[in-house]
Structures are given as structure tokens and as C-alpha cells.
Amino acid sequence: MTNWKAYRPLLLPPIRGLDRIEVYEQHGGYEALRRVLAEWTPARVIEEVKASGLRGRGGAGFSTGLKWSFMPPPDGRPRYLCVNGDESEPGTFKDRQILEFNPHLLIEGALIAAYAIQATAIYLYIRGEYADWIDRVEVALLQARERGYIGERVLGTDWSIAFYVHRGAGAYICGEESALMESIEGKRAYPRQKPPFPAQRGLWGRPTTINNVETLANVPLIIRHGAEWYNQIGAPKHPGPILYGISGHVNRPGVYELPSGMPIETLIYEVAGGIRGGKRLKAVIPGGSSTPPLRADQIAGVTMDAESLRAAGSMMGTAGMVVLDEDTDMVRVLVRIAEFYHHESCGQCTPCREGTGWLVKILRRIERGEGKPADLELLLEICNQMEGRTVCALADAAAWPVRHTIQRFREEFEARCRGSLFSVPEPIPSTSQ
Ligand SMILES: Cc1cc2nc3c(=O)[nH]c(=O)nc-3n(C[C@H](O)[C@H](O)[C@H](O)COP(=O)(O)O)c2cc1C
Image (cartoon, rainbow, N blue to C red; front, side, top):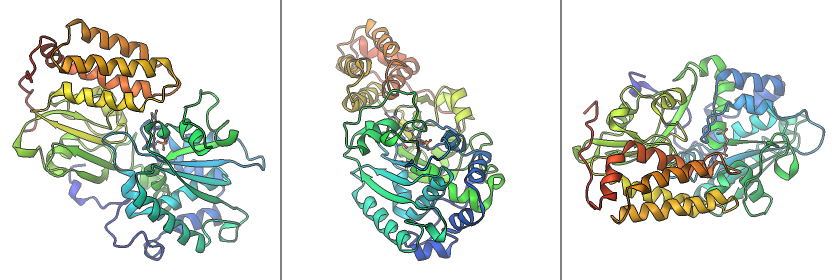
């Protein structure tokens, strides 16, 4: 998008009091739900969302409509929609903006999704640290219940839906979809083996679909304006508005809503006001701490969508960008990231439980200047033993930053292994500054 300043936010429009149902309704709120319940079959909703090209905003970028279509036909017994508001990936802080400023958009999106998959109940899982936002959502849910959008025979139709909020207790693993379901069931959040996938056997063994908060907030927009309108926004294969969370060494960190496919350079130098103190860019972690960092000389022309980022050697993840300036010690960054994944490993799978600990130990000794040159190969070998060998993707999320940070900043790690404690090499000049 060349003129990003002309973009008008859709998920977080600048309307005061949008968390109050009357304000939300004055601006077209719940019309999409009304239309769907009055005129559309569940299959038509799924087709429309498929045609929109909406992809999940929780990290994996899977087609939302396709995921919904995996649900088996209703059999009269319970089936569920889980809404993932765990938001624990470091660098990610965008779902909470929806919970705070536009909770009814999420509630409406979740209700439409639940109708599409013919769910009987919705569980919204929110990390417990988001106490204030949980309260706001609870109030919004009360308002929606009073208006007849939730409960028995919604808006006089034959369709009934229950809506529950579940507070997490602050564990990253609870964001993994099957661990989240275990947690709702009151068990220790150990991820489940897949298959069976949640659509076959999910919450309490019943068919379940799970979607991220931001993903579902897009759904009313698609129904209101149509799939064709929606897939004109941003990158053709990864369309729609995106909440870019930009943090780190920029002048104006924050959450910015813009179309998908924004050039990384525009986001850093224009939207977020450039690098703090006029310094040069060293690296960008584009989509949360598990996504491989890109060096400054790797970002020219790279846009924030799955295709462009894959070609550049990284991933879209949650679009939580961490910007690192020329003074950044990449060894320290990697130690900190590795410590997070070690702390958060649930311990169920040996390669993850042990591997994340070894990564931390070796990285810490490199940081102290006590590493050996062979340590880098050892770290990469541990990554080989972790990736793809566990029940869930936490081990991959822990291994990718290690593998790619070492590959892309090898000199810095080698210098540390030679014992040079303060050996941050000259940064590679950024292409745009
Ligand atoms: C260790 C781990 C943590 C995760 N944490 C989150 C999270 O906090 N929020 C989220 O939406 N998805 C998270 N995910 C992804 C979910 O498993 C799942 O793919 C997502 O909720 C699906 O929603 P979407 O298709 O709308 O993106 C995590 C995955 C893993 C492996």
C-alpha cells in the first residue's frame, strides 16, 4: 500500500465507546449476525469465509473457511467453538486491543462462526493477566445476552448458543490449541497427539473448531461487505486488515491496523517513526519471538504476508514485529528468547523438555565468553533433534530462532566463542536509511 495514511481502520475504528453495545449497533454492529441468521445457511457462511481468503491470525496462517469445513455434520450432540485469546508469544499484544476497544466485533464474529459450524457453545479462553480486558468482555457479553444475541433461540430462530469465558493462569502452552482444550477441561495443559484433529475430537471429545481472537473479528466485516470486497484488501494470498504490533527500538511502538502485505521498511521507518536515536537497523523479528529474525540487508522489498516472508526466510506468525537497532547484542537476544521457551516447555516431550534446557545452558556460556567454537554446531544439532519430533510446535518455536539467529549472525556468535565479550560487529547498512 503506497498511501497507508489513507487507510481507514476496520477492526479498531476510531469510534468512542465502541465497547458499549448501543454504540456498536449504531455503527452497523450485529447486522451481519442478523443477516446470517435470517437468510444464510451455515454452509453459505463457510463458503463466503473461504472465498474471502481469510487466514488465521494466531500464528499458522491456515485458511479459516477451510478449517470450518472440516467439522462433521451435526448429530444433535454438543459441539464447540474455542476462541483463542491466550496471546502469550513474546512480541505479540494485538488481541487485547480488540478485547479492549471492540469486544462486540469479536463476539459477533464468534457467534457467526459458531452458527457456521453449528456449535452449541463458545469458550473464549483469555490469559488471566488480561484481567481488565476479561472484565470488559464479560460486560459486553452481558449486553449481548440482554439483546438476545446469545442464549436460547437467538433472535427468535431455532439456533441456541451458550458463551463462556475461561481465564488462563499464565502459561504459554495454553495457547496451543489442544493444550487450551485440556486446560478448559480442568486438566494439566499437555498438548494432545494429532490426529485426531479438534474437528474430529476436540473439547470433551466432541467436534471443535478453534480460532484466534483477531481471526474471528474479521468475520463480521466479510459478511457485511462480501468476500470480494475483503480479498481486495492487502496481499492477494493473505488478504485483510492486520493488527501489526511493533515493538523494540522504534520511536513509536504500538499496534497499528493496516492492510496485510505492508513493506517491512514502511512499517519501521514511516508507521513506527524509524529507529530510536537515529540509529541503524540491525534485525527484525517479523511475527513474534518464534519467527526467524531477518538481517537489515534482508528486508528490502519484503512485505508482511505469508508468501513474501517465506521467500525471505521467515514467517508472518502473529505480525508482532520486534525491531532491533545496531547496538543490539544478538547473543543476549537469543539467550532471552531461549530462556522463555525453556521456562514455558510443558515437559511432556523429552526433546523439548531437555532440548530447550540445553539450548539455554550452551547459549548462556557463549554469552559469558566461555563458549567453544564447536558449540555452534552443537546448538544446531540440538535444534535438529527438536524440530518436528514433539507432540506440539513449541519445540519448533524454540529451535527456529536459535537456528536462524546463529546462521544470520554467525560472526557475532563466533566472536563470543573466541571470548570477546563485547564484540558486536559493525551492522550491515539498512537499505532505506
Ligand atoms: C506453543 C504454542 C502456543 C500458541 N499460542 C497461541 C496463542 O497464544 N494465541 C493463538 O491464537 N494461537 C496460538 N497458537 C496457535 C494455536 O495452536 C492455533 O493454531 C490457533 O489458535 C488457531 O487459530 P487461527 O487459525 O485463527 O490462527 C499457539 C501454538 C503453539 C504451538
